[in-house]
Amino acid sequence: QVQLVESGGGSVQAGGSLRLSCAASRLTASSYCLSWFRQVPGKEREGIASINSGTGIRSYSDSVKGRFTISRDATQSTVYLQMNDLKPEDTAMYFCAAAERTYAPCRSPSTIQYWGQGTQVIVSS
Image 1 (spheres, helix red, strand yellow):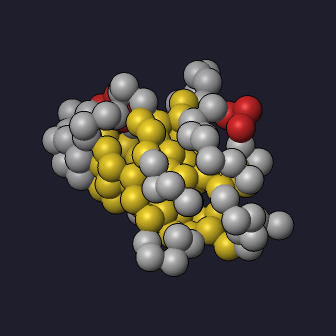
Image 2: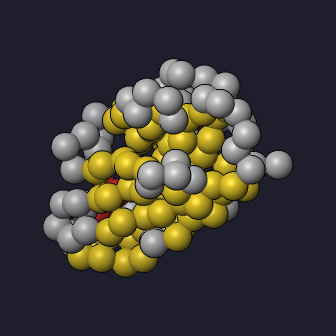
Image 3: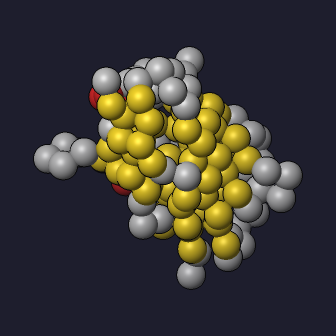
């Protein structure tokens, strides 16, 4: 069973930065996609960034493009989300997610097979 463990959430003032990490284990497929979602109470989970293992192709939602960067380490077992110029509307629970056996972006919840437990990000004005 694939396991995803997030870390790095916290509280920050608007304009600040945070970096989230997601340690992925037991990913055995030769191709997979790792992504970040976020969710606020009462709203649907939003896929904000994804990266594919083989191609390295990144995909971003319009809400974070130019401010957030998804990356991975050399072993491809850890994925990061660098969040800059944070805004109060970025406040949410952030989830790491994985989709196996795909070369496509994975920012839609329907494409995801595995989820992390989430880490809270709070941005104050």
